[in-house]
Length: 291
Image 1 (cartoon, rainbow, N blue to C red):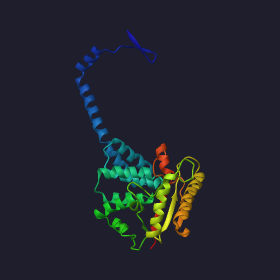
Image 2: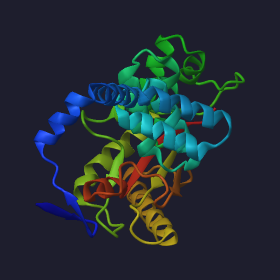
Image 3: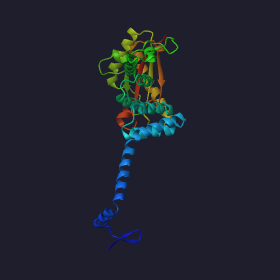
Image 4: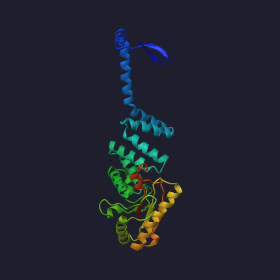
């Protein structure tokens, strides 16, 4: 009998014939086994090899290739913590709005290397960038406790040149447990929900009584559905709605409240899911004590 393969008639390969080949050429079989084993070991070690390639590409200023190499190292599952930290930095260097991905790399890297002061410091700066003051302060304290001088200066309210800098007021610490200074909105809406009014009343009273000179920044945001200009306008209207409510209820000086729209440029979560998009439709309330 014969099998049809590629238009040609070839003899059927049977297990009996295979056994004859093994008996006649055991060295061939042994070599094949050794090569297979070597390849398996080499592949298992590729996480470190890809990490080293990434560093080489990065030193050569080939940042796209470096990111791809770090991704390959991470996919293998055994990459060193530094691969995650370097990938996070390149993520932000490539796109400063991609904070969610960068944070995920920092999180994983710190899990592997929980005593890396520089990583805590960098993640703290990133948290401050996306205006999560509570997490920013937490990371800076970890870094400072590990001896990181820049984190210590950050916590003391001084910049690297020693000048006094503006100090973020930790609003979350002044709120009820589990609450954050965030106001969320429905899709394509700038109307305040009823469940946020109590939060705004409480924050307005605290800001007026305890921080009478602080500047209040209302950072408006949107998800990624729609054009950039539309979402910029929508985030501005959301900030304006919060400002209007605070002025009408708290009596804060209008000159102290500033609206800063960011559109879809600073997502708090991934826009790939409805849950993530809902978290991005927000206004973040920031209070700053000026020097």
